[in-house]
Length: 250
Image 1 (spheres, rainbow, N blue to C red):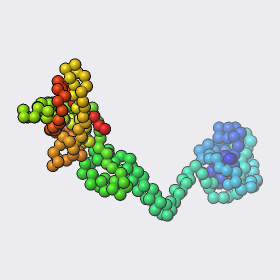
Image 2 (spheres, one colour):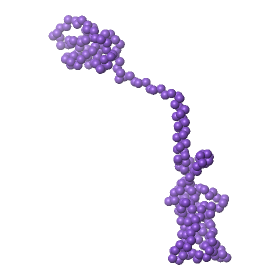
Image 3 (cartoon, rainbow, N blue to C red):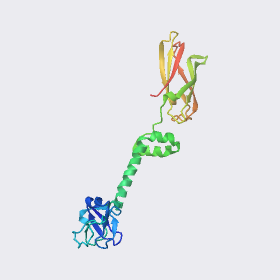
């Protein structure tokens, strides 16, 4: 890079050195129009390749006692040097051929997201369940419902003899509540019969098909709702004195 300045009178371009600029506080005299100007005003740095070979012009008779005189060298009249710092690089052109593979990749990415988060999508947008079901039918997968056991509770339960005519048959009734604001999978029930010393006599697992009516939806436990459980079992003269009822997901 080299330093050049421009005469404000005739617009001639000159190459200067640091010593020439600082010898008279930047004041120089144009070798063509003889105008004295400050070289710092229009000083720029340009690549050496932009400067043509120097041509020494005849120097006028200068009064050496004049402090404003300074020896300068002129260059050939050329177009103003280009300030490369003002040139903005052109934006790269994007070929339209990339739009097709990009669109295919976007579709594949959306499909992967829907497959991985199909349960979360069902929770956030229940109306999309038919679409998700069709997708899972095609992809041979299932829309797994949430199974947050800590959001379920047994509100009440009772185990009593169903009929005095047959004391071995008992009726189990209970109320289960889903405290979650979203649907969940129906839980299973673990019934444990105990004797007077709370020792295990027998146990049985009841699924949704066992404790719900056939007319009820046996796949979804609606959010913030309750279901009534009722089922019958034969104790076979176990003489059970107590029971425990627990919720769990198989």
